[in-house]
Length: 217
Image (cartoon, rainbow, N blue to C red; front, side, top):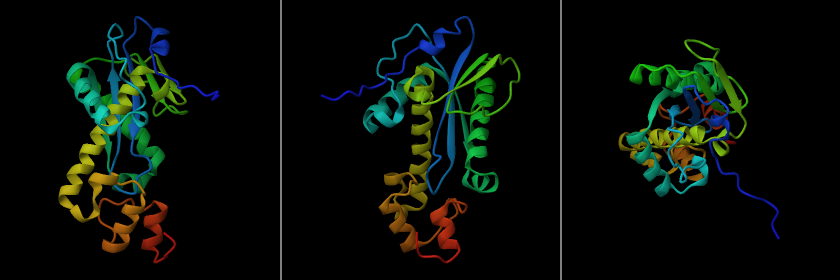
């Protein structure tokens, strides 16, 4: 008999801070060899039933797309995008922090509303307290524990996938619509066949190996 169990996100963390404006923040796209890293800052209505929401990596693409469409029509959210050239310049961790900051700033700009509590997926604070913020709380595996973070993971993932689908239209031979820039066998084969293009992350190992004329990609 298996002893494992699945963690389902809920409002346990959010309920600790009732009475405050609470947002979850998560990112998508730290691992790919191409394209941007994207973050989303999301505020949920704590009285609503979000039973279908889970970590974006644990639901099927079809279900994730349906949830994404529901979320963008029914919740407040901000988006932050940091392109590959900036990732190469400041490194992926700093680019992730910047994307999270930009998503927070976009949320404020769109709704003229200042979050007071930020629940962040991860083990770091992407930026310091500012504006009306009282607390930035990192939560390891937060997309499995907090519904606000799980929702932000879905929006970030789907938004980034849509961007990569646009890149596919510009560079169809790379099939970005299939692998979204991740280092799959298919993507590596396409890089070897067609070479490196402007949306590839030159600082990432496999791409850097090709630039340095190495073959162990």
